[in-house]
Image 1: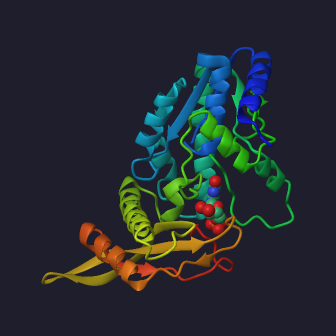
Image 2: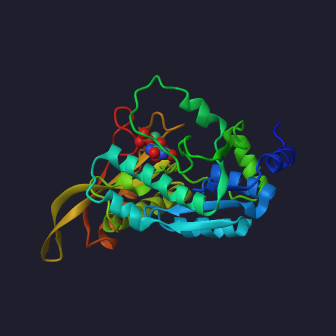
Image 3: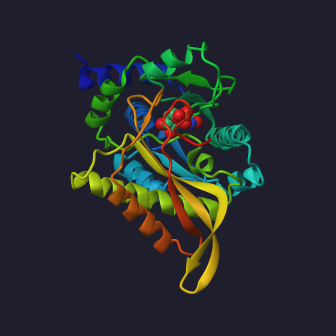
Length: 315
Ligand code: XMP
């Protein structure tokens, strides 16, 4: 049986003797990296800097939520607004793999800069057992280059500290609760964030569109699930397509953009079935998107593809 208090006591003693000097951790606001940040900060206090990189491509309200959580938890943290450099690095890039690589590299650049400035010698990561067990599997072809906000390369010149390496997800959740971290039951969210939900170039405008549409999808599906009209999907979001089509608004012809709704049931994301959302719920979403986003979107479609053959994210 996993006893969080025992684990914390043991780790704090161990961390105090291994971390001599300053340490840094990248925190995405997710359970793993936040729990690791709180645990290590209990051990070495201000000598740990927790960095949250705002890429400008986060979901609605995300940065504010993380900021208030980190300040409540009393860790020494910094929110780095790097949106400008992310948008310039992504200018005119439409290839999904290029987008992923650029975001990953840019993230490392920003983080390295912060580490240098803080004179960090240690890098803390919220790696948990399934992360390294799964990454040992190279039998499957690489379909997408995945990266998490914590997934930094090993050639970074810092000593790696992974205090939760042997824990499984349920143990991490127990630990997180014990440390006062809100364990959100929020759906998974990809490291490259909204950039891979925009088919085509990533600009502040396209991010705004997909962010707003995504928040409508989230709100309405969560409402429908709460009202017992359906089961909440495992993952659900909006995708902005590079397709324009003719529409009519009042007496005018419009030529607007298309939003695809993606919602799936899955256990672990490896395979997925599209969610059978009731038509009346789809209609509410479609009406809200086209009313509230009149200036940009005039068509909403629903993705009815399973994984395989499709993947969950479009890029
Ligand atoms: P796909 O699109 O490959 O996604 O069917 C499977 C699950 O993984 C998430 N995903 C990512 N998660 N970094 C992550 O941490 C990534 O680069 C990444 N790409 C996809 C996706 O949201 C889904 O839950």
